[in-house]
Image (tube, rainbow, N blue to C red; front, side, top):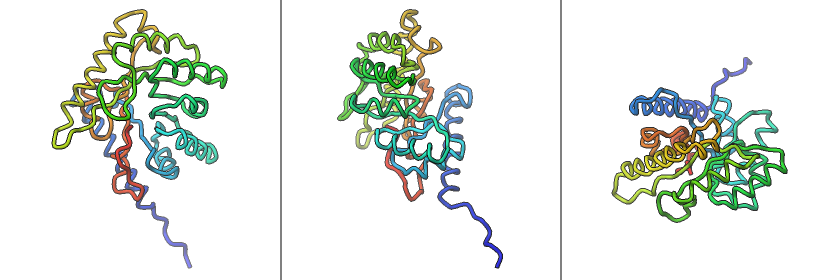
Length: 259
């Protein structure tokens, strides 16, 4: 009997549709903000899905992938290596210093440097491992349980420290919007938070001594998740961290995973 015709699995076609729809939404948000389409990078956060979903994303052309836990990063990056698949791995979660070595070995970009001690640890580990990851300084602009980051008043000293680290490439600043309040539109609070980080970045790079600490003399902004990427793009985000909007209607569908 002839072999049955090959059909693409429903989950993959749904994922491809979600990815296409999300990219179109990012372009529309850029245009609405008076920015060029494609001005913002998409970081697909895969922490709530398995390695198969991450592999499917990479094979669809989405190579920037993010994990917020060391264990997930190691498991997925190891699976990619065994499959001969390429990705640019981002670590976006709170990084404990005792896990720094494993993260440095696997991650190309780390978005969550939040203390002077962590900068020192990552510089030492990166030197020993022969690595030079790109890094963002996390800035704490709102309260909330489990939130981390430098206070705005401490960002200048953090930029000096990270910029002087020979084995770290400082590329920008990262923040998270405040948790939404029940019954309240989260948009205005998110927009205010993102605009504040953009203001801090402008002040930092206006100082030549601080600007020199950033790769290319520019502070990129990592901000915006599934529920607030439009506000982040309007405020000047260069990279949005999106998970749940990608995995809607999939068996391994996610809760909010943009960290």
